[in-house]
Length: 361
Image 1 (cartoon, rainbow, N blue to C red):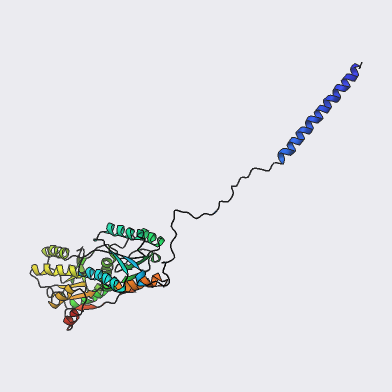
Image 2 (cartoon, one colour):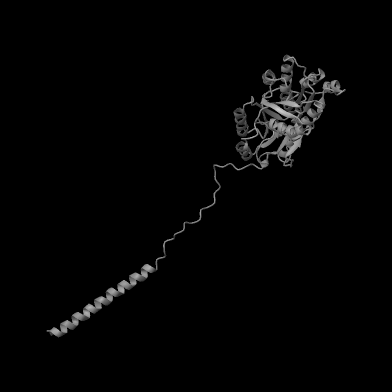
């Protein structure tokens, strides 16, 4: 039998042993917890996958660098049919395409910007078309469709009309320097009004948003002050004989104090001539009329002594455009502007009949 003192010693011993065991277990548990690596806070880097919904721009045509004219399918966006110049321009593209053996898809925008933009989208989506030629109705609003065309691998060439867009979105512009045409016109009007006591000129403007209208007006104003010309009236005639006549008629009812009419194309000039005659004045004598394009109608009016001067704007641009398209298709470089060759014709030219007989438009 154990004494009470022995039992107390034994109890203390068991308690101490129990505490040692618990302490040992706690220590082991702490070491195990610190051995677990911390949870990662950064996700693994994603694998670079190109987006599938963004078309990548093509580098060239399948035939590059050995393309021939027969490989080209050209979508031509014409402005409309506003007169003899435009008819000659359209004929140039159709006839030259047939001669060269390329395929031409023609779109008449009917002088409607919304239709022209829709036609541009149509050519972008057409898998056969590899070249788009644009005669723009307006200078602005083309950047988005040009980017779409570039992404679709289409070659884009501007003809006749410039636009306000980055040059890297199209291959080249082929056509006139309209501002220079305006400057030529001012010089010619100064000659026509030389010796005139007053030099009041009225301006018949084309489509106000087009580069031809804007630049011809600007160029004329740059030079007209050299001989004291003032523009007393300016209004659009929308490139039309009918509207050119209507605007001039309205002006002549207000006043006949005018020495010259600066019409931004031949059709409006011919309309002005009709209005002048109906008002009892003599075109070419009482009022000098100057216009642009040098069409057959203009030569007829000059031979009759009614139109004083026409500044040429060459519509036969298709050979230059198609040549540029083929060069671009084969990876060649082109200047951003290829100017057309043009002259100035006046009613007092002794060779006028001979020149008129040799014209193609």
